[in-house]
Amino acid sequence: MYNIRCVLLLWLFVNPLLLVAQSAKTPVAASPLQSGPMVGYSDMREVMLWAQTNRPARVQISYHEAGKATPAYLTNEVQTNQKAAFTAHLLANQVEPGKKYEYDLLIEGRKVSLPYPTQFQTQNLWQWRTDPPAFHFAVGSCTYVNEEGTDRPGKPYGGGYEIFTTLAAQKPDFMIWTGDNTYTREVDWNSRTGVLKRYTHTRSLPEMQPLLASAHNYAIWDDHDYGPDDSDRSYWLKSVTLDAFKLFWANPNYIFPEGCTGTFFWNDCQFFLLDDRTFRAPDKMADGPGKAYFGDKQLQWLLDALTFSKASFKFIVTGGQIVNPAKIFENYAVYGTEREKLFKAITDAKIPGVLFITGDRHHSILHKLDRSGTYPLYDLTISPLTSSPAPALAEEVKQASYVDGTLVNDRNFGILSVSGPLKDRLLNIKVYDQKGAERWSRDIRASELQ
Image (cartoon, rainbow, N blue to C red):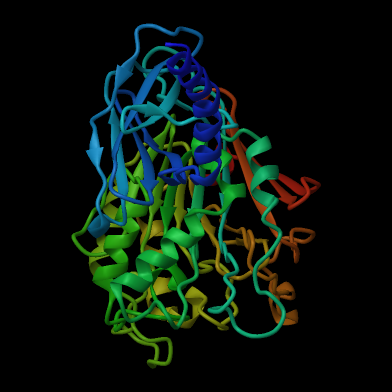
C-alpha cells in the first residue's frame, strides 16, 4: 500500500510538468481571420458587413445598438470557401434608421478579439421631418502594398501605410475608394488565383484594418484593380477581376451585369459610381464618335439618373480625370468627343449640383471648368494613398481650369464635409497629407452649382 501511494503521489507531481512541457512544444493555432471585418454599404433598414478568413470557417456577426448590450442580433452565417477567396458578406437587417451599432465578429461561434472599435451606423430618416444631417466622408485612391518577389526591382513603389491610421483618426462616416485600390502585377493578370491573391494581399494590410472596421466603405476601380496598366475593354480576364471586386467590396448595387457601375445616397447627396474600364476603347484609337470611355449604355444611365436625382450635390465618382483639358495620359480629354457629349448633355438638361471626384494621377488637384450661361464643373482629384507620388506636368498647372494652391504632390487623402440647411448646403473640401497636416481647404455651396 505504501509503495502504491508513493507512485501515485509521484505521478500527480510529474504529470502537470509533462503537460506543461508538451504544451510548450505545441504551436498556438494561427488566427482564422485573414482580413476585416469591414463595414460596407449603409441604408436605413440594412447594413452589409464583410470579413475574410484564411481557411474554411463559419463566420457571423453579432451586433447591438451602441451603449445597449441588449437586445443583440445576428447576421446570416456564412461558411467561407476557397472558391470565394474565403470571403463572407454578412447582412445586418434588424436595424433602425439613424442609429449607431457596435458589433463583434464570430468565427466558429467564438468572438474574435480586436484591438480597435468595430461599429457601424444606419442612415437617417430626415425627409419631410428635418434638414438633412451634416456628415463627412473620406476620399482616396492608389493603394500599392509592397510584396518582395513580385515588385519591380529598385526602390519600393509603395509605402507610408500609416496614412490609414491618420485617416481613421478623422472618423469619417464613410470612405470612397476611387480606383487602383490594389495593384495587380504580371504574376496576377492571367489567372483567377493571381487576382484573388493580390486582392487578399492588399486587403490584409494591418494598418488598414481599423479604418475598414468602423467607416462604411464604397469603391470603384481603375486600371490596376481591373487589370494591367492602362487596360481597356479588351482585357481578357475582366470577368474574373469583376468577380474579385464583388467578393472584396460591399457596394449596394451593380447597374449592369458587366462592370462596377452603381450608385448610393447619403442624406441629401447622391454618389454615382462609374466604371471607366469595362466599356473603354483603347487610348490610341483616333478620337471620334466610336471612341468610348464610359460608353453609350453607361452614359445614358448616368444622364437619366442625374436628371431624376433631387440631390443637393451629385458626386460623379470615377477613376480618371474628367475636367482637366490636358490631352495627356488617360484623361477624359483624350476621349474628347464623348467628353463634350457628356458636358453638353448636363448643360442641355439643366442638371444642377454636379461635381466630379477622381483619382489615378498620384497627386491631388482641383480643376474648375467655367461654362457659358451655367455653373462651373469641378473635378477633385485625390491621389495617392500609398503608391509613389507623381507631380503634375507644367502644362496642367498652366490650364485655366487649375484652381491655384490645390496641387499636392505627397501621399494624401481628402475629407469632404456637407453641412447646413437643405436650402443652403455647404461642401467643404480638406486635403491632408499622410501625417495629418492640412494642405488646403475650399468651400463650395450648392447654390453655386445651379
